Image 1 (cartoon, rainbow, N blue to C red):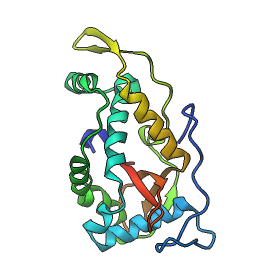
Image 2: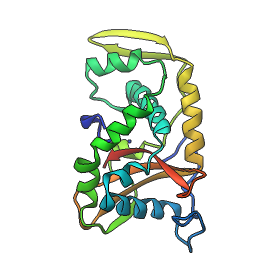
Image 3: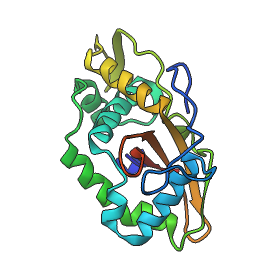
Image 4: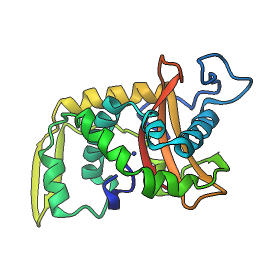
Length: 214
């Protein structure tokens, strides 16, 4: 999650859906004309200004663990051009097993101050389209190749793409069909963020599944 330089979390041929246009109130009831993407941003601002625990509660960490591993495979396939050989070796060796929930909860918590509080600041957050090239692709999952080919330390390596990644891709496409990707910045803070969200049967009505610096 987050900017890849920090190792911190749009739709195309994956067939995902557009952002939902209706939301629910914090108690689960319908809001009056508020889009889900706007409510995601408003809730994020409110949670960050309240406490770190409120911010962390916005996320589904099982989904975050799946999304991060899936993004690694797409990074390896060329989404990121500046991967080190160590990163390529790590991502190439991954078999599609999601990161544990506890790991992602810890990582998301670690970004509370440097990313979440920095962006929100005193508030005034507004939804916008993602700005960076990477953030614009956070909801794009083209078909995976049967064989993953990559050059590491000057040598070409290839291996069948582990089947687990197709399961992760199917999950991601399903989540995106019920949610979307939204960027935002705040007049009371600095920088910006992009989050991926999906509808979920809960009091809030949705959960965040990744967050990235934008």
